[in-house]
Image 1: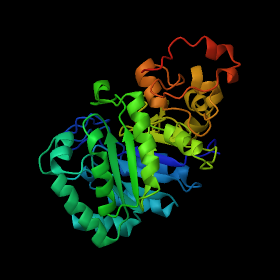
Image 2 (image 1 turned 90 degrees about the horizontal axis):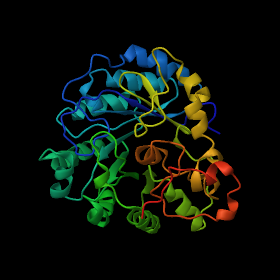
Image 3 (image 1 turned 180 degrees about the horizontal axis):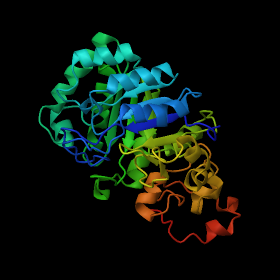
Length: 352
């Protein structure tokens, strides 16, 4: 279903950011890089090629508010039938006026990160005191402007015990979606901060339980096992799941094309390569779209078309994005494994 066009396109507008988040995927810096794509380049090399699709177009960073031309790009994306969303950092750059300009330009939603239910937890995670209180103020501005709110949370050992209170905070803030990210050791994030496989599975099962009780949608990033758990609980799911490289593409601030921001394997650059051609034909992207060819248990798991495991985690731990997700505790029926390739996989190792 996603062979022709991606469903989700992430553009890393800049790596500049005033926060100092301990898990930052981008290893954000204080000042903008002169190598960033210009608004004109983004329009020509990213937006125009995507025009036949209605993909979600997410402007992320760093902090996209570090750029003065963000509303211009949002307007151009909206004009081309894309659905622009933004994930700003909670800083003084997020003013009521700028949010209003973004809404007028065609912004469909805004996501703020909240990694704790209190200032004590969140500010420790974000590295700057006062970030929690400022986030609350900016969310109030969103509600005033009637811009739909998504809350993003990165789950790690630092906030594992705060998730219940955090889930209630998401409801209190009237978010339409809670997007729960599971930490991948890339950028400033460290593997020692990750939940273990069993802990991760417990959190995913808990998320499914509370989904039956809360008014907002819960989705996960780099934890596709959530779809497997949903399926095990009897929820019918489409086999056309979006994962790294399959319906999903990431454009770095300098134009490099990745399957995901958490999977740092560049397959080209929009300044020299066609985004759509790379997405459709690059061997890395093609390989990621065929889970039956994955190594180890992910290759023969009965849930691999609705889950496929985290390709970013597989790469971070094993060095091969086609390996099995070593943090998935689920054991499929070994009788399903009819491939010699799967039987001789040497890197896959389930972590207890």
